[in-house]
Length: 213
Image 1 (cartoon, rainbow, N blue to C red):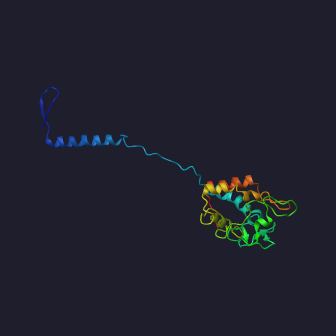
Image 2: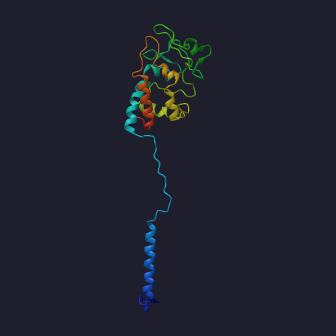
Image 3: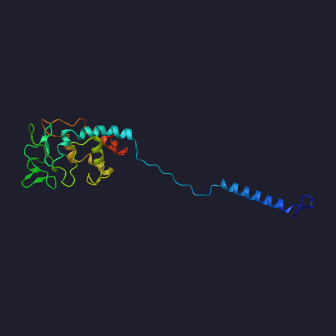
């Protein structure tokens, strides 16, 4: 192979050396291209949902003791007869759940439970939507461990097909709020509604973890 020097004289470069030189130049070119940033940058996204098992389980402790109080559990019995009183005994009138949760035949919940609380000690509390969960989705609280109840609450097949958003909204449901306005002579849940709602949302948004069995 012939090349010219700076003074114009012809130089002879062996073919083997030329081949090595060509390979070296190719390697340098490839190496340089490796540092180029022509490829599109992938967008990195982060989940806005916090997942903290410790925080979630601690919040559910408040949720659980609230839901197991008579004001909540009495309308979520294991059987088809609602519970009554602070000791959660079977309802004295013996009403039954019915398919829609509003009673059977002539014995409907609305016969005694009016749209508002009836004045007087231990008189029937009221709400326009007073009922038990329907027969097809009983949402039992009575007898459930914290682990079992946590799992049930987020199971769409057992909670009325509610996702996290709908579960959060359910904290302000009319019958849920009625638990903090039970009428004269009845104890309130162990925490305020605001405290319950805060714990409920914290539990759900931090992963809805179930306490260990």
